Amino acid sequence: MAAVQRLQSERIAAPRASFAKQAPPGKCQSWRTKARLRTFAMIWGRSCGTITPMDALSHLLADVRIRQAVFVRTRLGPTGQLRVSEAGQPSFHLVTQGRVWLDPMDGSAPVLLEAGDVAFIPRGSAHRLCGQDNLQQLMPPIDVRPHWQAHGVQAGPVDAMPPGSLEVVGRTLSGAFQIEGVTSAWLWGGLPPWLTLQWGAKGVPQWLMIGLTYLEQELSRDRPARQAIIDRLGDVLFIQSLRSYLVADGARGPSGWLMGLKDSMVSRVLGAMHRHPAHPWTLAELASEGCVSRTVLAERFSQLLGVPPLTYLTSHRMHLAARRLRDGRQGVAEVAQQVGYQSSAAFAQAFKREMGCSPRDWRAKAQAEVGEGQGSSSTRMITSS
Image (cartoon, rainbow, N blue to C red; front, side, top):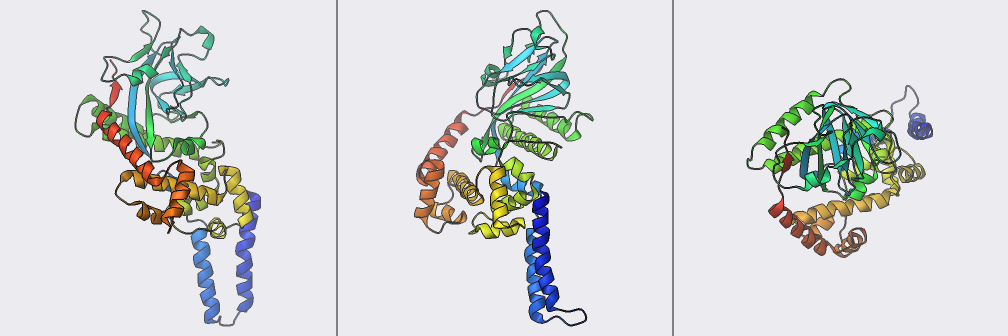
């Protein structure tokens, strides 16, 4: 990062020095020099410092939506354990009372979660919640996933407690959901297999308490648009989780968009791509947005995101086009222009390389899936007793 900052300083300083030579102290600058200075200030002012990681995160997640969220309340005793079998579906656990231990089942030590803390499992890998960190003294596990798959409202929480015991050491609101708007490989590729957020370290945040109260109200009554409201509350929880993890000290992940956002230069480039996907970007223009040379941009971008800048841009354009094709309100040629393609044939070829089928086939398949989901989706909640 120090080397990148030096390059930025040298690149900014050099043009300023050349302009200074053209206008000696005490002499009036020519109109041409003044115009060049105004152009320089405009370009560098736009490129350096106007896009923060949070701005870029807004653009990256603008079209992400939670769908078909399911919830289950759990209670754990001192020797209880709840297992979530692997299914490739994102899941989370919010501790609402007491404390529990997350065992990622990857060889790492269990992690303590207290009231207000959240564990997020982006790729839906197998894991378990435990009443204590001594895993050798736990009772046989209870699988939570079948309860998520059950339809309708059930009478009570999922209990992981010894027979006859009433001692509860922790309660959670656990859930799973589907993501609409991006491919899961792109989104989850930037996150570690599991992550925890210590929101409860200074007490349960007020926004979380309000959100949970609102969620309880929606789940307790069968009213119009209930599923839509619950999914939108899921959006808030999901995006807040990503934001908290992004700004957390020491947050790390594999190569991907998350690590790109944590780099000020790459985040500016990502923000430019996502703000103006139809612009005919060149590597030189993108380097200007990042205030670095083309070589530095190519190396840093590839290191953090795993692909070169223009490869990422093509992928982003195709996924943006896929979302607009699914909506069905625009023709293929119109969508092609909106993502930077003047030729429908060139767009169709690029789309097929990225998505595996033609734009028209993608639209037909996506709209059929949306129709099926609208006919069968329902909110599923296991209420607490």
